[in-house]
Image (cartoon, rainbow, N blue to C red; front, side, top):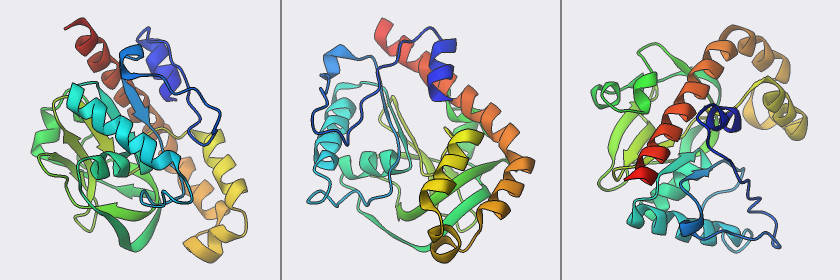
Length: 223
């Protein structure tokens, strides 16, 4: 979905598989913006996943240089750690389409104003963080947890997953398999039924969200 949104804005996309030790990481002078996506690990598992430290350093440099950044789930947590905010285990695991509450600041934001009161977003996470230093809260969850924030002039982050579409969601379910009901307490069938109600609206908002981020990338590039 994010790729299609950037294509809508005429922005070419280069995909980096951070897991691939042979991947050629571009320098920030070679890109106009950074979209950091999710993963199942904790941001501090750098011994098991060395790319996490490299990605954190990249994001820290992007924030310092004013390169537009969007972090999703693990990506949002890496942005937080790049700003020296701890990422910890949440009181409870979250999975499914759950309501978010945009803040007054979000209504004036060029990216997060896509969200309105009563909107739902797809969550799949077990870690969380507080609002990073200097960041502005953009949305909270039912338990008042941080669900979206803006850091620095051109950095946005969501703890939920605005990027998912139907096929990707089903792929995640297949990958987790029997651990889905055992670990997360919900079945693929239950979540698929929930998606039939909420996914269309979620996808429309997600695509528009990334279009708006793409416009900020172009704006920063032109400055």
